Image 1 (cartoon, one colour):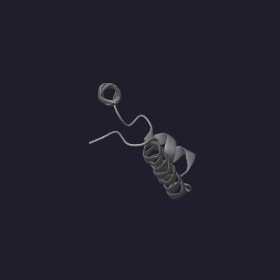
Image 2 (cartoon, rainbow, N blue to C red; image 1 turned 45 degrees about the horizontal axis):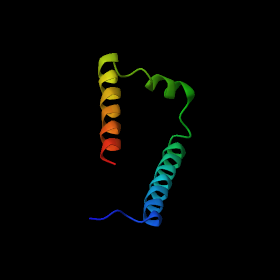
Image 3 (cartoon, rainbow, N blue to C red; image 1 turned 90 degrees about the vertical axis):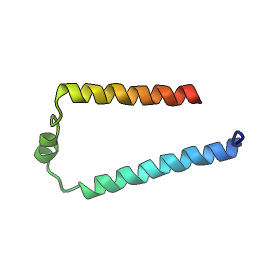
Length: 69
């Protein structure tokens, strides 16, 4: 498997950005009627240790991906 061309790489990157943009806009549109108190009450629903482990795991995933590239 070879290295993709610059045009193919850009297409993959911008299509991914576009997909995230569309997904984010859809989620925002679906939650547009949610009140501020409902949104704020959903914060702080995860305890500190699982949140810290999740943060570490996501950082390790990013590190592994950048090392492979």
